Amino acid sequence: MTKVKRSFLPHPFLTAILIVVWCLLSGGISLGTVVFGAILGILIPQATAAYWPDAPRAVGLFKVTVYVLIVVWDIIVANVVVAWVVLTKRNRDMKSVWVAIPLELRTPEAIAILAGTITLTPGTVTADMSDEGHCLLIHALDADSAEAVRDDIKNRYERRLKEIFE
Amino acid sequence: MNVTDLVEIIIAVALVIGALFTLVGSIGLLKLDTAMKRLHAPTKAATLGIGSLLVASMLHSFAFGSGSLKEILIMVFLFVTAPISANFIAKVAIHRGQDMPPPEPPKDQNWATLNPTDETVPGIEAPAKT
Image 1 (spheres, rainbow over the protein chains, first blue to last red):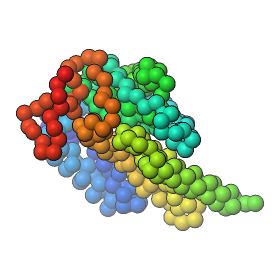
Image 2: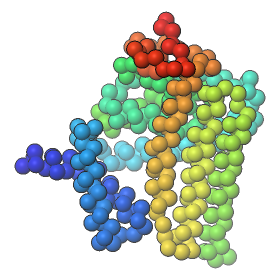
Image 3: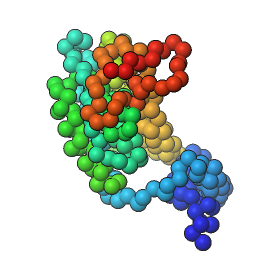
Image 4: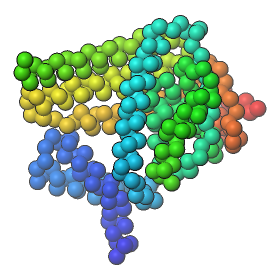
């Protein structure tokens, strides 16, 4: 039974998201959109199941919400800070640094979200990962010290992602 | 002053904020000097600039017509895809070596981009292994 369920609906949560996305795209909830969304929601996870063999683990919705709110707040605050730096600081006064962050996270999804978060928050861009996936390379636009950026990211984002995913 | 006026003011403020941050992103792209620094400007304009414009669009559609939530999808797709293109540009910038070279990783051998492989890409020199 579980095997049949697994091959028919490899990712039930993805199916639900695809139905919601299809309804949003077609701009309304009607029987037609829900049925067509369900067809897509069943076919797409089956077609892509080979690339995504493991079922995602359940994550705490409350902690995810807190994380998203923190990231959105940081994006707004850092946008203002970076806009000020871009407009007022001369190029040679900016101290751009590379920051290498040793990772404690091991889940690929968590590392991907951490890398995305770092790029979305202004002032830092994820540039690369070490060949065996234990470090992230980050470029900071204007930072006093690489250590401060590293500790900030580790305390603010990585610790929370570790609680969510691991 | 009724509710419609208030909503209109909020929409106008959101539009101005969005336009302002998109402008700052463009100014940054022109003003900053190295490839890695320039990368910071447009990825920032994409977040708050476009986000604010989309909030204005959503408010307008709910206040003055049929409500639309497509903007949420635009925001989600933008937030998911923007880091990936930024990552590609950063990798090219590292390969071309115009910026200062990145430090050694504290763990592991090398950065994935700089790992020597058997393939040689025309136009890009194989990175020197230190």
